[in-house]
Amino acid sequence: MKESIGRKMTKSKQISFYILFVVLSINLVVGYSVFSSSKTSQENDQVESVRVFVDAVKLLRNNYVDEDKVAYQKLVYAAIDGMVKELDKHSRFHSPVENQEVKEDSNGKFAGIGVTMQFLDKKLIVNKIIPNGPASKSDLRSQDVIVGVDGISIVGEGMDRARELIKGEKGSEVVLKVYRESVDAEVEIAMIRDIVTVPSITRVHKLSQGKIGYIYIDQFNRTTDTDFEANVRKFKDEGVNGLIIDLRGNPGGMLDTAINMCSLFVDEDELVLYTQGRENKSRQEYFARGGSKFMDMPIVILINEGSASASEILSACLRDYDRAVLVGAKTYGKGSVQTIVDLRDGSALRFTIAKYYTKSGRTIHNVGIDPDLKVPLNKDEQKDLNKVLRDLFPTAQEISAYDKDDKQLKAAVSVMNEILEKRSPNESITDFYKKHSDSFQKDYLPEPNPSTP
Image 1: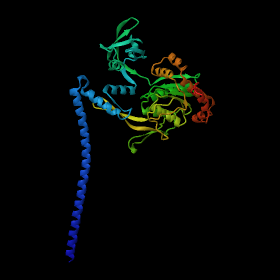
Image 2: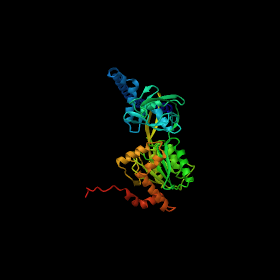
Image 3: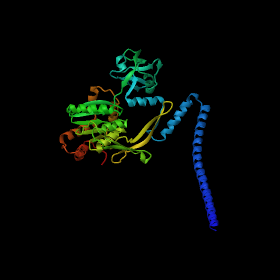
Image 4: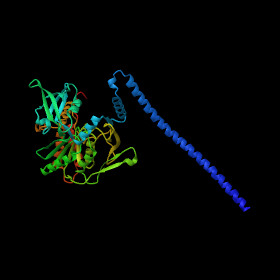
């Protein structure tokens, strides 16, 4: 009897097990089917989209009227470029030539002849000869019009084509054909390409009887931080008491460089900024580093609509820690992080992976930074400023001449002189400025419109 009951219970357990097994199997099959269906659906969408693209390329390749405009590479590059532009204005596609130029700009070096040029009235004119470059050792002169490179005419071709032909391997020869107005003739000039260093700090001099040091930074490249520190240290050794950092028209550059520069004026391990990507775990914090510090030097930073990215990071950091007063105009508002990934043919994708946030959690992306002292410029003043800032090799006479007319720089000098003369030793720069801001602002308020009652 007990044995019979045991067999019934065993049989019952077996039936239950089989039922459970069937149910679980059905669930597994259904679940996998749904998952596979979803996955297959996504894969089908991807394949179908690629097919549409291939069909479009074939149609254009076979039927477009100008065959030279529908080469495979042209069409693919144009498609990638359009795709990336749909993301945001800071993401872009770089052709192999553009990608190489970006790398050269980041390093601040390239193999060339050492000139600055301007394209005016469809003429490529030599503007300045860079000191110690290949051109300075040749007969090339300012105002020569470049009409050919190595036997190739570049008349009307523009700056990009000229740069492409003039740059080359270090030690290789390049022959320029130039038109020289003084002799009304074309002249051929040969020179050997060499590494040309493009400075990121283009103006360093003293103001206000030597009490104030002025540094203009054109961009943030790999050597900007070390060059900047060397110039600040020299100012200190020469008895300079205050520092004006000019970041107007500076589009940014390398994040690490900006952090190193901020670290010179902020205590070690203070939060400079953090970045946040798509996922919460992608948050990354950046702290001030150790090393040299210039904690006793007050700072005024000049900013404007062309100050972006690393310029805004440095400005926000030094103001957040009460180390600087900002003068000028509202910044561009570029608070996002891009990465550049090389593709197999030497081209590259540049795309956004995160956004910057200040230590207080504020974003500057599409917002910008307002200066403490707004000093507006009219169109002519802005045009003159842009022309001056684009000159990477100014002479001492050119610097002195423009400084006299630079309204924003004069405002920065005025603020710094007040800080040096009236600020008490234990008073923060920010507190001092707030206390006296009204007296500064009244000098730069818009003039009243006489027609307004």
